[in-house]
Length: 441
Image 1 (cartoon, one colour):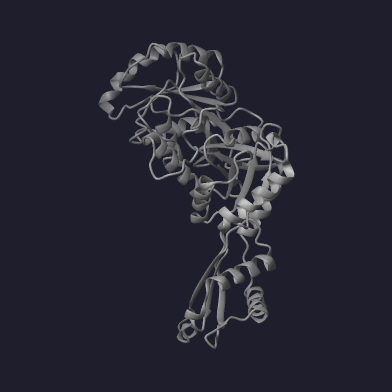
Image 2 (cartoon, helix red, strand yellow):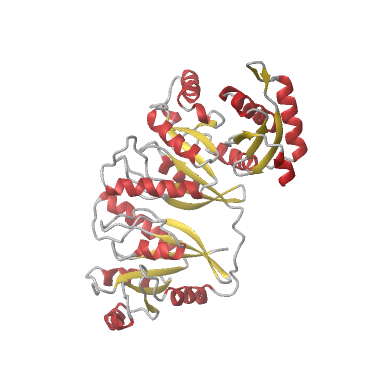
């Protein structure tokens, strides 16, 4: 069982920078604007013979607004569910008036606490750390998260506290599912409904989720990583740099995902924005499920199903292989279907055909529907599967100029039907056959 480490502290002390340093890449958005991080963000860290989950949290604030209360609830939940707390403070600014009260709360929680004094870039600056002894913690480590200074010492301290019985678990098979869609379609509500906990702050203001948020979930004794993303807006212009960073973060998350769930609003249908997001998914060559959320609000469901199926065919032609699920995050209706489909789709995404299977399929396909243009017959001389994830095939033909787009689509559809490539893109590459190719191998 993984030990859980929560990174806490007031806004803008470098919690997300520290989180990114643990992760090894820019997973959390970094910005000078306090409150950039609003949700808890999980990541599995492997260090030497230990494994643990590190959680980035929203800044602890004395602001008592409704929204700040939601962030505070997230923070309290992160602390209650963790084994070790990293209390991050700003070494350059000194003790903030609000930090003694944070320290008091942490001491009363009875959790293991490591005081991380950030922004101590050099040995000479460590003199600034002495005043932080007044916060009352035995374990105190000066670091520079932005430069990586003393990170090894911090990791060693964490591992010492974890103990000897928590070894690395094989996480290679944990599937990563990313939820994408325009703002306010219910992505965060959907993730919360799955994990049965308020892990994503839900608010009726579009753009509440600024960063890509990853949480652990278990379904039928199988572990998954779920990534909630900032809403993607249509158009080429971004309103500000925060929106740009959010969009960029989403694209990074797409790179790492195993399967994408494109979330649409049942009352709004599929439009240009969904088509744009689908384009990102296709570009990244990811398997996909289309989730139509807020289905509980629809009265004439039969007509709505027909409308969505038509829109899927017309506006998302290149995603016509994706399964569509009509669901409700609010009521939980059909959410379980995501987890019924995901293992099946990933299996198809990872499929490798034998050479014999592929040869037999291509012979049958060309015999059933030969392509003849200008009195010449197209012949597929050689075929091979190059890779999986996604399944990628290369065909050598006698005359590349005879090949037509419609015949490419025919071959793709034939392979899909023959081998049940459900929910996954497949890539077909054609090249001019060269007689010397075989000799050169």
